[in-house]
Length: 115
View (cartoon, rainbow, N blue to C red):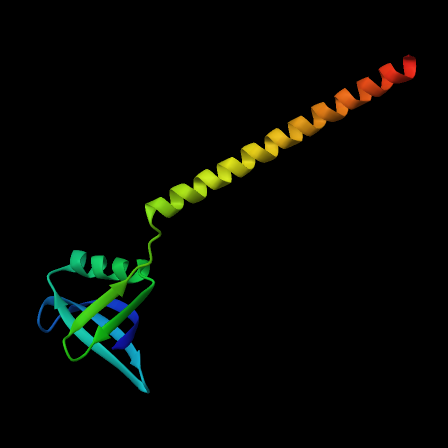
């Protein structure tokens, strides 16, 4: 597998067709491979897939291009959001309770001093 360093959309005037060029880099090897595509929309789709992927590679033995993506699972995100909301609520409530408690303590102390 060779790492894909970049993609380029090309219109070949000789064959009058669209192509995508892959800039590849591997174990001491750098190469450029060209593949025909149906049109600029297909080339743009491949370039966007490359840009959005976390890693991409080309297998010269099979001719397969692989774009890998990292996604967080929705369950993990929901749990994190709930934890963050819970922390904010607890912090806010604790601060309010602490302020009320201090005020109540001050009032109680004043009453004790007056008595």
